[in-house]
Length: 113
Length: 144
Image (cartoon, rainbow over the protein chains, first blue to last red):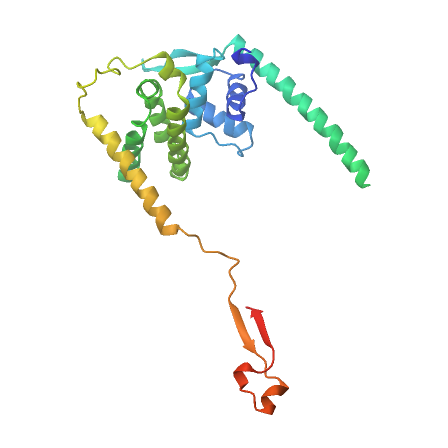
């Protein structure tokens, strides 16, 4: 089983979703995750960089140096093709879970009525 | 702001507890994040980083596996003391001592289900027949 075929942790999933929009630096990822979860999921720096470390090692995320106006450089993270594939697989997996859960809950509702 | 500077210095010390390869790669960015954070987010940042450090040592990090520190392997007998190692040991020891002190202070936790049992002596008709009041009648145990 390759890294991209494994189920993702919720933090890794949020990071990949954030990077699917644009390349981001660490703070940008944190803000994006906060926005996309409606403020319910706050990613701390420890969790963020532990997950980025694994995602970088697994080839799901790459890093680029962006040159800023003042001549400074900033490291940003980018979703790789493998990362995009992993994200699509994870979304498919989650959709299956949601479908099964919805069907079963529907049956429970029918039983209760 | 002195408080922010102090918090950042404490955070910098905390970051030194990461494995060297991980620290070299990510600590500057983590410090930038902490500097940009609101004071209300500091507990989350410290707590999250503390847990992540322990997990990083227990589970190993990808950076640690790929990049070993150049002087990571010192032959036995040639171990050198340096300020950063002493500082790491000091911070870790203080954290452990505080943890143990707090745990012993709080242990055992108050049991919310403990109820005092009171024995109430109900005077019965026997006392009228000359039996001492302490031995007369039924004893009723009432939880309060």
